[in-house]
Each structure stands twice: as C-alpha cells, then as structure tokens.
Length: 279
Image (cartoon, rainbow, N blue to C red; front, side, top):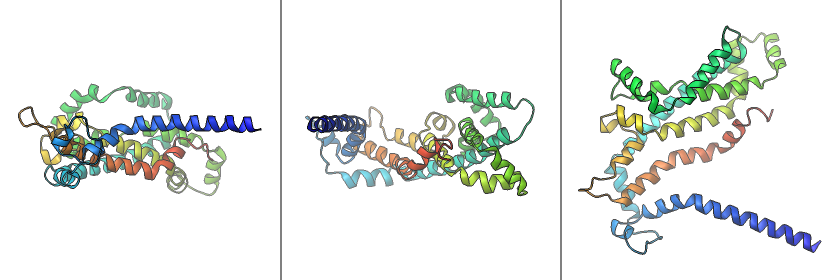
C-alpha cells in the first residue's frame, strides 16, 4: 500500500509541476507587461533586465489614462462592443428560432449559406464593405463600426444547436398551454438559454475589443478611435522614440475589461458550450 500511495503522490506532484510550468509560460507575457508598465524608460533598458516593480507605477498609468486619451478609446470600444453584442444576440436568437421551429423552403440550404460566411475573413470583405460605407456616407462614424457586424453566423449556429436539443414534448406542452411563438420564445427559450447568451456575449465582446484593421481603415477622427488603434498610437516614430512603460501601461489597462468579464462569466461560458447537455 505504501508503494501505491508513494506512486500516486509522485504522479500528483509531477502533474501539478507540469501545470505550474505551463501556467508560468502562458502568464509570462502578462507578468512582463505588468512589471515593465511600472518602470521608467531608463529602467526598461537597463541590462541585465530588471524584473521588479519600477519607480513609475502611478506616473505611467496616470499619464496614459489622462494624456493619451486612453479613457476615450476604452469608452468608445465599450459602447461599440455593447451595441454589437446585444444586436448579435437578438438577431442570432431570432434566426435560430426560425431555423429550428419553422418550416420553410430551402431552410437547410439557407443555413449552409449562413455558415459559409464564417469562412470569409474580414480582410476579404474590407474593399466591398468600404465602398458600401462610402455610398451610405457612414465613413468615420460609429455606424460603420457597428452595423456591418450585427449579424452573426457563429451566434446563429450556437443557438440553433441549443434549440435543437430541446425535447419535442416541451414544445407540444407549450402549444397545449396556448403559448404562441413570441410567448414561447420570451418565457421559455430565452430564460433557458442564459448560459449560451453569456458565452456568446463574451466571445463577441472580446472579438470587438480586439478589432484593429477595420477601425484603422474606416475611422479618421482620433476621438472616435477604438482601443487597439489607440494603443498603436502610443508607439512613437523613429524620431520621437517610444516610452515602452507608457505602452505597457496602456496594454494592461486595455486588457482589464475583457479579462474581468471573462472571470465573471467563465461559468456561463463552460455551461453555454455544453449546448444543453446539462438538461
């Protein structure tokens, strides 16, 4: 028995040691950014590199927040992410509801075309999308950052798969009780879909938060920029130089909102991607 317990203890320690090493490898870039965000430009370029908290902790964060318009970039991105996420969830639920609970001609073919849009990366769509925004006079507006991204093939697919997992007797019972389509959707489907909604919300918010190429092309007014474009503006030209402590402080602040959201909704993400297996 002693040999068995010793072997079990060794396996346990080895398992957790491997996990700890992997955790440190994954977390190192974040730890590095946190440390460098507290250092002056002189401390950053000291050799050998200093991996301790620097002397410019408050200065760097106050500077990037107040002097480099980071607060405005975060507010812009938060507003855009919120509107897109709410819009995508509503449209995805309605589309999935139609695909699952209604019969119409070429339903499966239409759904295939919806899924095909997942294979089109944003760079492929940029030129036609840019021309469309010009024709609508939406250049340099939030409309151009929001409207093209309201429809979601990913969201439609997730909700469709989730709705298909509902037992048919639940639908029949709702019909017997006199529940119409709207009541069935609002009082039964949506309350039972909160985990999927939470999972999709995190996916979409992080997706919007990380957008760079399209906002860089379509927005020309600095006060309307999003956080990723704003972070890029912190990097100076060859003549001006770059204060990497300021850049790292901005990167850390930009990371916090989606990180906090992920921590809060991580349970919903796990349960949401089980697609109804908990029922």
